[in-house]
Image 1 (cartoon, rainbow, N blue to C red):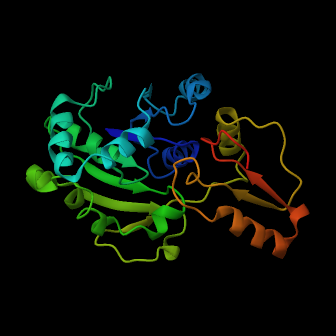
Image 2: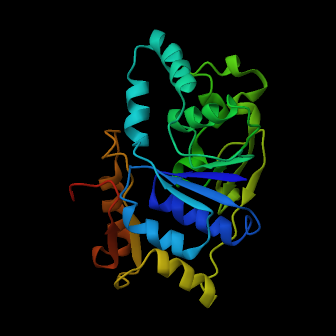
Length: 255
């Protein structure tokens, strides 16, 4: 039984693509966080019958993780363990064998440890989150995240990562001690695939510009970024009239 955890629309898009391809025969429960407004998608996902259950969480992953990271270093480990003992609070009623997550942030590790401390043996599958999936040193981050992984013995997060799933594995910048697998590209020539995605992610029109620049979440998450400078350089190359900006789902102010 598979549990997938999504905090962005892109995560959800990728889990749908995985369900249509590599996980076609798997039963999947999907938890979507409160980081984006997934409420309009709940009925569409249920009607698609792709997933066994669709669960809307009230947790904002980015806020939970930020609060943990801002704790004094000496307090983080005890705080983390105490919260694992209390549990995730989600209405999960299955014994899961596989967990699909987009990133290795503190909340995702917390969710994993909540599951394994309740007797589950879980393989972790990291899937394409965007640029971060291609550049982050996942194993090195385990040494600096202030989570007491060794307390969980054989269930340590790093020892149970089964794979990293990417659309283009060759772009990964650093070798990893676990496989980097390929997510099949979306078959846009398949009417059934297009109908599935369009039923869940309806759109009103397609932009006339040749290039789409996807805004990252750094500005909204108070992380230093040079995305405007990069956009301006790209616009100089392709022409400002040929590029349109897709705002990040958490954006509240169009810069």
